[in-house]
Image (cartoon, rainbow, N blue to C red):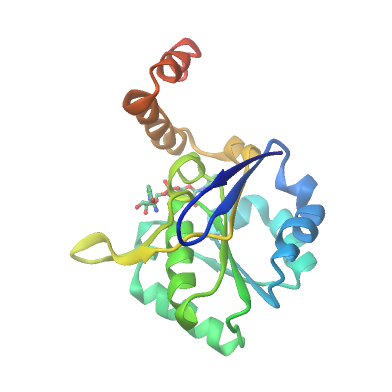
Length: 209
Ligand SMILES: NC(=O)c1ccc[n+]([C@@H]2O[C@H](COP(=O)([O-])OP(=O)(O)OC[C@H]3O[C@@H](n4cnc5c(N)ncnc54)[C@H](O)[C@@H]3O)[C@@H](O)[C@H]2O)c1
C-alpha cells in the first residue's frame, strides 16, 4: 500500500493506494482503516453494476462493519436531488446520526452523490471514498468537490467537502469497460500536458495514449 497525504485547510486526509484486490483485503481493511474512524453506524452506497461485479466483496465489508447498504441504479441521472431525498429518508428511518460514516463505493457518480449527501445530512457526516473507475481514482475522489445536477445545469448544487480518506484499489480497473477506462485516461493525459512533460512522454512511451 502507498499513502499520499492531501493537505487541505478544512480537513487533511490520506489517499491509500492498494495493489491488492479489496476482496483479499476486506477484513483487514474494514478492521484497520474503516473501524479506526470510530463511526457507530456505516452506510455503503454503491451502484448496481459495481454490486453485481463485486457482490461477495461488498457483502464481506457489510458483514465486517455491520453496515447498511444502499444499491442504486448506475448512471448520471442518479446525481439528483430526487435521489438524494430518497437517501436522506433511508438514513433518517434507519437512525443514522452524526457519528455515522458514509462509504461511497463506485465511480464518480457515486462519489459525487455520496459526498453531497454526507456534506448535507445533519449538517455533515464523515465519508470515505472507494473509487472504482479510473476517472474516480485519478480525479473525482480527490479535491473535495461534491454535487448533484440540476435539470438546467450539471454539478450546480453542491459544496466543497473533504472525505476522511480515499481508498483506491487498483484491481477494480480490471473489470472496467474500455470506454470508461479511456475517459479516465483522458484526465491522466491532461495532467501530463498541463504540468508534467516527462510524465506525458512516459505515457507516450508506454503506448497507453
Ligand atoms: N468531483 C469531481 O471533482 C469530479 C471530477 C470529474 C468528474 N466528476 C463526475 O464524475 C462522474 C463520472 O464519473 P465516472 O466516469 O466514474 O462515471 P460512473 O460513476 O457513472 O461510472 C461509469 C460506469 O462504470 C460502472 N463501473 C464503476 N466501477 C466499475 C468497475 N470497477 N468495473 C465495471 N464497471 C464499473 C458504473 O456502474 C457506470 O456504469 C460525473 O458525474 C462527473 O461530473 C466529478
